[in-house]
Amino acid sequence: MLTNRTLARINNRPRKVNRLPLLAVGGGTLVLAVLAALLYVFEFLPSYAVLAVIGGGALLAFVLYGTQKAKMTISISYKGNLDEEVASQFSSVREALEGLASSGKIWRLASSARLPKAGEVAPSPERKPARIGLLPTPGIKSDVPIWGIDAGDESIFFFPEGALIYVDDRYDALPYKSLKVAFSSGRFFEEEDLPHDATVVERTWRFSRPDGSPDPRYKKDNVEIPVVLYGLLEISIPSLPKVRLEVSDRHTAASFARTFGAEVSTEELNGEKAGHGEEDRRAEKDFRHSSSKERAEERRSAEILEREARIATARTALGVPKGAGAEEISAAYRKLARTHHPDKVANLEPEVREYSERRMKEINAAYAEFKRQWNDPTTEGARVG
Image (tube, rainbow, N blue to C red; front, side, top):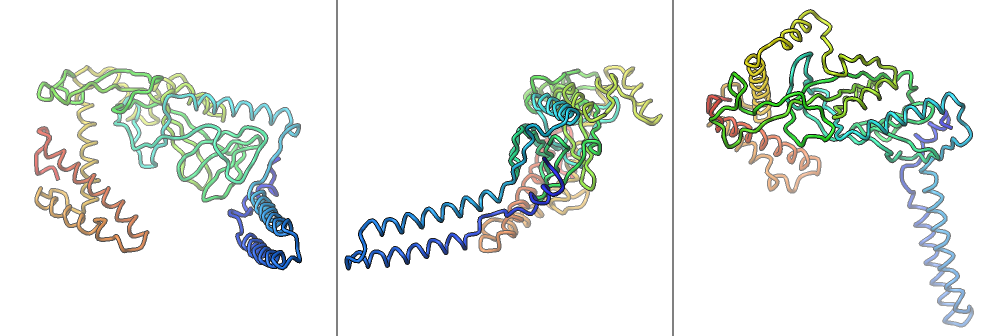
């Protein structure tokens, strides 16, 4: 079973094979093989003696390698060692993870991702696909299936006794009672592939009139965008940033949260939970009773805020001030592109090349954003900077 002593062995295990003993065996075998060959030439040894030396050396190297590999993995056995309460809890956790993994899409959200308030619809936040399932547990071999959540910089593995948090090739134990999970629902504009189990609450146009109808000026690129209701999970881990997940099937997300003691109301599940403050409650009430024209204006305001946020990020990437014109922005882009071009850093350290590669992606994305805004007739052209 997983004890403090076992956890210490896991964290102190060797991470790679020590090559010195293998090289010593290989070198010794080579010397002995040469001597045996010379003795064979002078008919002091039979031919099979040379083969025996080579085979013995290879066998010894194989045994040494296998022994070292075995020390890199710690085995944990639970068969017949789990009491009824721990086994029941582990079964509930496993079922909750299986349900969560069955969702059409699960994303991990950046800590800075903007989430909608009560009654609000938000653009899709910065997110990446999350992995949930029977994931590899580095350095650990268990005789029961171990489910995990790959959250990018850290992973959470669910063992019978509790969770193991894996960060920087090291495990830290966390009892289930200390693992806090919060659930909420949120409405988002979904402009990527729509998951099969997503709940679509309404649809809007990418470019719309104040009354909610499509803007005829954008016949080519104007498409309907679904507004979906997703489940949001927030997993709190002591001394680490919270793990935030966006789940297409909010029911499986709610079930997962309940397994860890979260109270999920019908209002939360349906995305109708009022905010804690009076202002949030008024906002939700106004949203419920607003006309289609008002909702369209709210969507347009959200689009403007999102556009302004993208432009602010682009300004930061290119190092230009607010209000910069097209010429100043283009000049800043060309200067940075020359500085971080792959040909300029080809002979520098790998860290410098990696940094320049990241910066090139950032400044290319920033300049593309400015050009997109310049070509958008709904903005103020070159004054968009």
